[in-house]
Amino acid sequence: MSGKTGGASHSVSGSSGKVGGLSGPRLRFYLRADTGATWNKPYGLSHIKVRVQAAGGGGGRGNGTDTPGGGGGAGGYSEVMILAADLGATETVTIGAAGGGKASSLGVGIAGAAASFGSHCTATGGVVMNAWHNGGLGGTGTTSGGINSEGGGGASADLSIQKNQMGGSSVLGGGAGNEETNTTVAGGLYGSGGSGAVNANGGNGSEGIIIVEEF
Image (cartoon, rainbow, N blue to C red):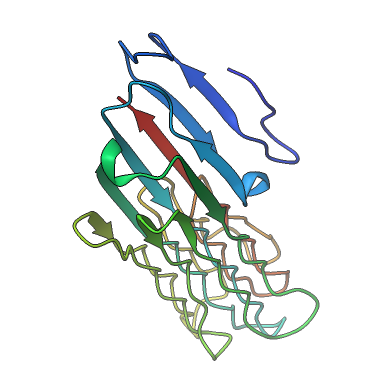
């Protein structure tokens, strides 16, 4: 394994078997800092399996007294097998930013951005709504011929309960929990939504990831 985890995100590449000839599968991981990176097709490739998880949306901030903001929606997910003959010599990796939670004053968070592997596999980010107390919708996978999943929606505010609202869960990670009213809770693992809060900043959504398995 190489690269960093935590702090600024960098790609983490692992491998097993041979690179040339590919006698065993090889995994490549791409995180937010790798957006615009280039995947290079290795010699002897038969096919790849691509998993794209888009970023989660940020949670809303409530009125500071009794009503929480809504949770952010999780990013969509898409998965597809692609033959080597259908791939270019290179493919561009794009992973948009996670949505930030609403800070400082009443309002909604920021939507998560889309992620894609070339033109072959794409998913959209978690959505935020136009009212601060409504939970965001999940993003969607949009790959033709692939497995597409919608991210979980964030929880809308229960106007009678002074408690954070949960962020949506993605295929690869759980959403932010509903902690106490004065706590900012970010999304869990990849692509999940941030919590809505009563008297604190909304939680940030979590970043997306692209996983490429080469055969």
